[in-house]
Amino acid sequence: MKPIIACFFAVLLACALALRAGAQTTNTIWLAAATTTYKTGETVFVTVNALSATPIQGFTFQIRYDPACLRPVNASSPVAGMNGLPLPQLTGFVDGSYASTTPQTVQGVLAEVRFTALQGCQTGLLLESAALAIRSPEGFAAPLAGVSLGERNVSLYIDKEVAASQSAGPETGSILPLDPPDVDAGISGWIIGALAAILIALLGFGAYKLFRAGSASRITRSKSSAGVALHMKQGPHAGRSYKLNKLPFRIGRDPQSDLCINDPQVIGRHAEIYSDSNGYYLKDLGAGTFINDRPVRNGMVVLYSGDVVRVGQSALFVFG
Image 1: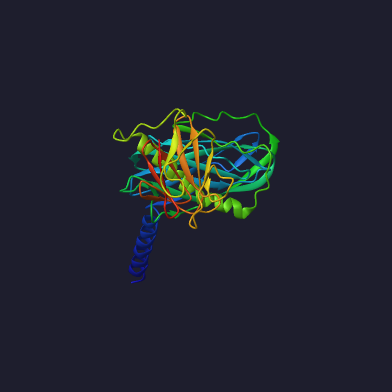
Image 2 (image 1 turned 90 degrees about the horizontal axis):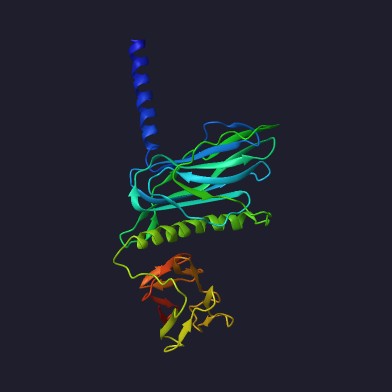
């Protein structure tokens, strides 16, 4: 009788473990390392991994590290079609973002992250936050709901013995530089947290930029600053045009703004327009902006000729 009871409980335990494992395999992101012991000067490898039942079109991750022990080098993603989106790096905090124009299934490594071991120490890495991105029905990038973080910590031991830099091995996929600033700016923890929250919006901008670049039906973006202007259609400056001769072009209620809009729903620094080699984009600074009647808050979108932008109650202009 006892062997039968023991067998019964063994089956129950196996089923419980199987259910637990299954629960951890859907929409989960975790940090891992094959080796946790290194010598000074060697390259440290960790991987950001994910299992998702839904094909994704981007991802982002933030890893906290000790700058006295480690210096980030770069990240690479083996996921087909993923392109790295360079972001400003903070000392002690790695920001990585990737986006793709087509949905990709992820069942393993999202990205391999490389650090250089600086000196002997006992340290660790913390996956501060991470997210998977999908394309919404409206064509925007949006975080995939229901994603949980699995293992977030990797403990590392760096021996003080200096070793010859080992062969780092080939890197596959899009390479994303992660060089930290040369001088520690002393950014406080709460600011870092705020920047981490904004990363989702930045990922959305990068993925959205790729999505729209792949759509043949959209208007070709402007590549020359000659003649590019904001044409006011409604509001305090209706009928006027503002050339984008100076970038970034600042919009807000602040009298020092390039386009000053006296509106109770417009804040001092409401939005800014930037450009790069590919074209122009608008960044909302927190009060809310509408592009072609679609809301943008704390994020950035690509501007195309003919896009209609609205800020505040009535100020409306056309980009082009």
